[in-house]
Image (cartoon, rainbow, N blue to C red; front, side, top):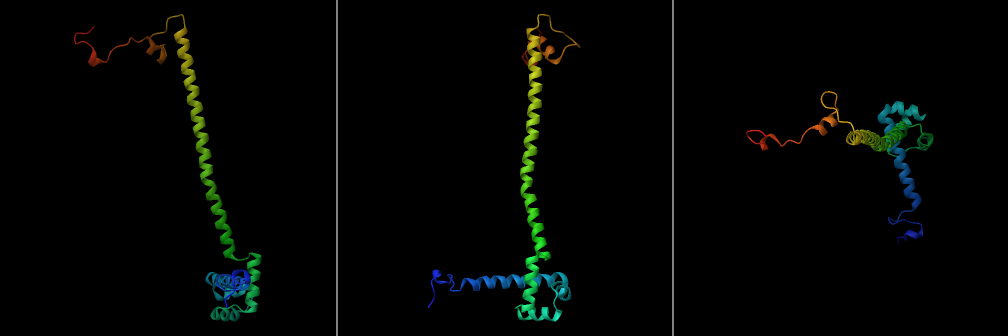
Length: 169
């Protein structure tokens, strides 16, 4: 008879402690295989502090011996694995990448604010010059000494060349 999830078994009918033990076993085996892949069998055995024959026997059986479990657990707990360090480095790299769009957005915001302030200042200066010129009781300068705004104000409104009479005015 299968137990219900509340009776100490999960939906698959396994005791929770058994499934945790299975996950831990898979993690130890993955660590052992990663070490062998990185350092070969002799290097992995040396890193774990076990005899190479113990490592080979555990690999062949697919079940780490008690001595291997202790060595692998120690390596996992201490964080001495290159696998763990690679995961930490990858996590830190992802954090930096995640912050990059925010940094770019801030730089763009500052650049837009600066450009807007510059354009507003130039616009205000132009408007002040135009107001002074229009309010000035003295005649506007004409010719080379005049500003572009003064020259534009002193120009007579002339129709476009194609709208002028053929014989002239």
